[in-house]
Image (cartoon, rainbow, N blue to C red; front, side):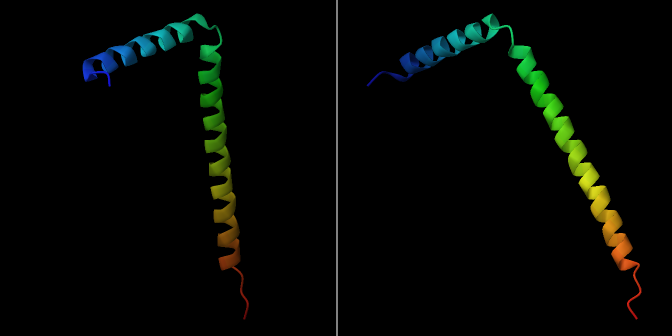
Length: 66
């Protein structure tokens, strides 16, 4: 079983290799942009649904059934 410092060094080497590979790709920024735009669209959709639900509930509470 490898010693703990050896495992830490191996993990650090793997992390450096993955970071270097990420820096070599050209579309890394595009993925981040896509995630941010998708999150904004989801937030807008949730806000729109909340507004519609609030208006429907207010209209339902305003009905006179008697």
